[in-house]
Image 1 (cartoon, rainbow, N blue to C red):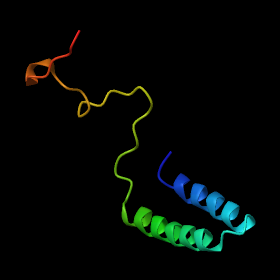
Image 2 (cartoon, rainbow, N blue to C red; image 1 turned 45 degrees about the vertical axis):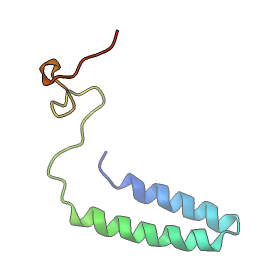
Image 3 (cartoon, one colour; image 1 turned 180 degrees about the horizontal axis):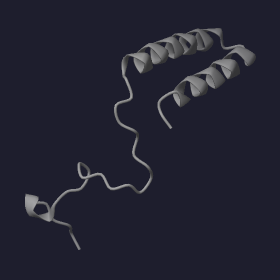
Image 4 (cartoon, one colour; image 1 turned 90 degrees about the horizontal axis):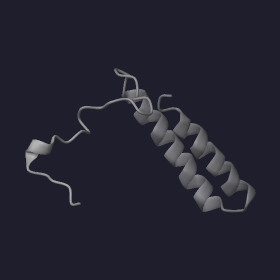
Length: 71
């Protein structure tokens, strides 16, 4: 999916703010959109995002780390 979806979400929110006479919010959302574009451009996509249900070893917690479940 990538990161560009956030640009569309911010644009939709800005359109809502503009259409509902919320000029300060509209201006803030425009600024947020610009910040998002700069940050996204500064992070090259080196790895694809995980798919739903895909195993991520960094998120698994082995039972031998002293953690236990209550039953």
